[in-house]
Every structure is written in C-alpha cells, then in structure tokens.
Length: 485
Ligand code: TYD
Ligand code: MG
Image (cartoon, rainbow, N blue to C red; front, side):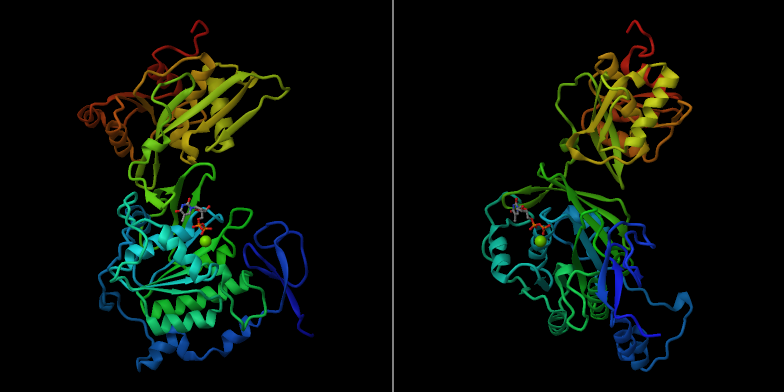
C-alpha cells in the first residue's frame, strides 16, 4: 500500500492519525488535529549516525556500553548555578543544574523573556551565557536589556550598559542548524532559547511551531546540551487552552517544567515547578512586574492579604504551595437568590469544592444555603487547590450569611469531610509559623495536631476542633447554626 503523503498531527499531544478527526483519539482534545506532510522525522532519525546517540558516544570512546553496579557509578557533586533570583532558584530546587533542560511556559506577554533575560544578565558575570532570541531582533533584546534593572537591586538605578566582565552572547536566529553550531562553538554554561516554537529545522517539512518541529528541535538541542553540560532554558508558549504547545512531547524530554502565570490585571507573577527532576514540584516563586523588569517578592503573603480591616464574609487561611506557606484572604458573598437555581461562582478555588462545602454546611449546620447565591474569591488572584482551604471557605461563607466578622488575627486551616468532620492537613507547623510571623494570634485547626505547645511558643492561641460546626463556633465565638445569631 502506498504511504499516505500527509498525516494529521494533534497540536496538543503530538499523536498522529491517517485522517482528520474532530477529536484527538489519543488525548481527547477537540479541533487540535492539523494536516502535515508525512514527517521525514522517523526516517532521518534512522539515518542519524550512531555516533550522535549516547550509545554511539560510549562506543566511540572505546567502551562497550554495559550496565555497572550502582556502587561503581561515579558521583559528581551537583554544582548548581544561581540564576540571580532567589525566587527562581527556589523553584529550580536551589539553582540551575549544569546539563539540565528547563522548560519555562506561560501565556504570551506574561514576562518569560523578561525573566530569562534578566536572570541571564545576572548569571553572565559568573558563567558564560548564550541567549538565542528567535522571536525578537538583537536590537529589540538590547533595548530590553537597557530597560532592565539589575536583579539584585530591583529598584536601584543600575541598568543600561552590560557590565564589562559579562560573558553574554546574543544570537538572533530561527534556524536550528545555526543555533546548534553556535552552541557547539561557544560551549556556554547556560543557553537560553526564546522560544522553542520559533525555532525551525529546515530538514522537516512542517511549519515552525508544529509538534514535530518543536519535538525535533528540542531533542536536537537537548543532545548537544547534555553532551557539553550546558544548562538549557527553553521558553515555551501556552496554547489557547492553557497547555504548553506540544506539551507531552517536551515534558518527557526536559528535566524541569516551570510555568509562569499571573493575572493580566495585576502586576504579580507566579512561577511554579510542575515537574522537577532536581527539586520538589509545586514550589512557588513570586515576582512583581515593574517598569524596569521583574523584581522578586520575598514576602508574598502580604500580596494575598486583603485589607487590614476585617469585614463580614472574609476569612484568612494558610495555604501551602510546595514548602512555602502563604497566608491568603478569602472573601465570600452570600445573598438571597432571584434565580430558580442559585448562582455559585468561585474565583481561585475549584467550583466543585465550593459546592461540596456548601452542601456540608447545609446538611450539618442546617443553613438553607441552597436558597442563596454564593460567590467566593481568593484575594490577589491566587489559585488555591489544597483542601486545607475548606475550613476557611466554610467560615467565609457562614460569616457572610450571618453577617458576622471573624475576630481579627484569626486563621483557619482544615479539610472538610463529607460527614462534616475536620480532617488533618499536612505541614501544619509551617503554616502556624507563617501565621505567627505575620502577626496572627488565633488559629483554628483540626484536632489531634499535637502542636499546642509549639503554637503557644509562637504566641498563637490554638483552637482545635473535630467537626466543622465546632470549628466555626470556636472561630466566630457564636453558634452560626443558631437562628437567633
Ligand atoms: P515579555 O517578557 O516580553 O513576555 P513573554 O516573553 O512572556 O511574551 O513581557 C512583556 C510584558 O511585560 C509587556 O507587556 C511589557 C511588560 N514589561 C514591563 O512591564 N516592564 C518591563 O521592564 C518589561 C521589560 C516588560
Ligand atoms: Mg517573549
């Protein structure tokens, strides 16, 4: 049978099909299949000389490739290179590892180029850096460089000209072959590719940014980077649906995937590790976009705390992002509905979670919440995924419903079970420390924490509760289930 001359490739997962489907059979996304000339990728891979693969390398060095006992495997101390940003280092797991591959994804305009250029600039004094700008001309990068302030002194006047000793090479190029040549010639300690979707391998028939292009370009860069111990930072764009374009293929290939996100209407940006072979995932770095680039926010809890004046319907929780505790304010508004089915809206927290908490409150406190609209928002545009926020949500909702104000200085932490019980949460001590550091004086937590003494040492009054009703009575000082409140 003749080979079909074109294939249909899913732009989301990279799966191939012989014919067009509205829905990708592999990942289930809709309208993601695009037609491509049958990829010569497979053929060229077969033709690639053995010496380029790692097996080939070992063979070339005269040692047949064999397994070896783990004790015999030499260990090299991990020498991490600081990116210049404490926040970026934290997300990377303590700095950039030589020879590692890091993918930085995010919406267009969120600040990926700014982040990497600024940290490249900070690194250039200590290590050689190659910055490949495939999207902007060298002039544009230089203009941005002038605009940026030094990382360490976010608001000082330093900026402008590159420092005399900096080893910073700039290449404005989209042709993969030329980028590879430059990488091999310079052997930089750090190389930044901005962006992987804009690179183009002329050997492949498909358009730049297509899955096969992204995959082949990244793989070719990775081979060289690993061989010469260059730390490679790849910028990746996010598709309309919020996934990194060609995500699955790249996620397997790289050592770390960082996502840069933020509210377009606010100046702060959040950097998260969703995969990290050299550190913990779910670490969070917080930045603020200023007129002279990104400055790090070392005390992010202040961002997510609302007004100083407590008001009805607000509650404060301590969420944990990785190992980082964040004190966050939640706001709820409960009002009589004028619809047949009441409106529920949640910003920064999963809608399902809110529905579940409302159902628990209705059942176990007897509050007729199904006759009320309920809106919930997390201050500062943060997304809180943890169930540890449940008790805070419940308190905010109940406080709004009863028009009550929680006593100032109160934080609430706890997961709600469907039976109305309060479940323990992880890293409680860390959360209490953060709350105490920010001047909170009362903490409502699930019972059995064993932290009463530690809390007293922190100057926190610890209120332990086994069930949501009990916790809310402790937090509010009155029984919200009592209709006379
Ligand atoms: P950029 O790094 O180009 O985003 P990305 O590479 O993710 O597409 O960031 C561009 C945005 O950041 C742009 O809207 C302007 C803004 N910005 C500042 O507010 N201050 C600055 O100092 C810089 C360089 C950019
Ligand atoms: Mg950019």
